[in-house]
Image (cartoon, rainbow, N blue to C red):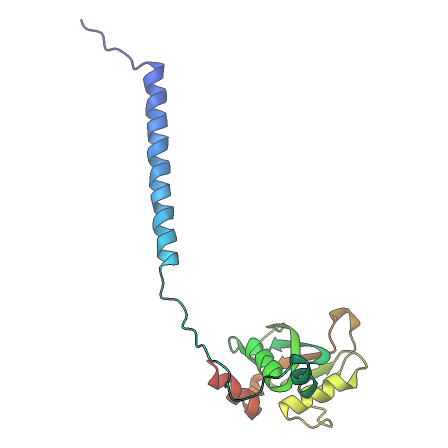
Length: 178
């Protein structure tokens, strides 16, 4: 009777190595495929505009003196649930009122019926500027509050509420920049 020869230990190791190399090769092909799919897209169109050659150039210092960035720290919180509204409002404040927002995020919930402008320290200039930006009179106690909290590191907190549509300039800007 012919005895079946058991595979040698060397053959078993070769089989294991060949299987491992095959699996790794398959995974590598998957990574290569994924990488090429992620890197082969049409991109974002970029508009290039050049300044008018007939106008004299202006120093950045002169532009800054005409439109200085205000030295207040503002945070914008989304309390209404409209996706991206805090970031768009921060963009509006920078472009239209030279207010540099240091934080835009979600509020603790999205159920705020009214927008709130909250003073976080004694710097009244910050509240005045944000009220002017939103078109809110300084005596509006429904919107303007004073709750000092130095730990936040901001001068003014704005929580955007469900009434954001009533602030025409901001809402128009948000709708026109989508």
